[in-house]
Length: 325
Image (cartoon, rainbow, N blue to C red; front, side):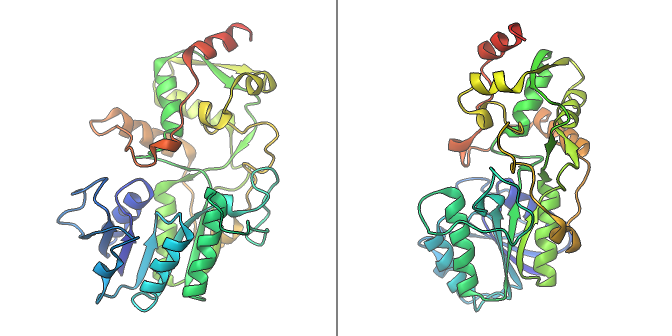
């Protein structure tokens, strides 16, 4: 398959390119060169340019599919889709479960749930508008992969890495109860596999790309982190209401935590994607591989989108919560 990847050097894009190259696809990467420059030299064609000003650098070429890993602005995505409509057969857009109007406050049963409308400058609203722009430019030839929480090696937001590093420090570790609370994630490599399957088979439409609701629990995730890092940490299960009252930004300070009151955070139906070929690896494998990367010579987080990076819980605040447990 001849594949164009917009982005292609950080986390999701990197995984897509790695999987495609491993399968023998001919890959062209279109990116600005600000992150991961030279990463795929000699393995893929690289076209340096900005999707806002330099789409003309793609003129005169043709691919079987394009995978758009970094579309956030509806106007920019509309321009990309319009420009590529005659150059590709299939457009695969990396979207988000956040496009659903009720997420994360209420469960999302399937892809037919209502989406955000408008095009204001909000991540989730803008992603929904990006989907509409692509469909307008390439009707019937676009797949929208609405990913849940993405984890795995080379994650740049730092959610799973924070927990792994915290567990590696050892000692009593704050764990908001209950351990049986359900969580949903997708390994970036499974996401890449699914994206490429849709591209190769020219499957259109929206797909929720995430593990099944309840496939894993919060306790299983934290125990996997503890085990992968040498079991030096001691999980101290703590009243979640007290933890929620003590932290200002629960999703950033205690990333991946199934926050009380967000009933839909980990309740997104994913059967359509399963039927289309999505496969999900065990969470312990994802955790172990992520720790192997973090522990290695290239275990630093890329600074792309560092403005939304998880901060993790301040050690002093953690000690205070543990003391009151």
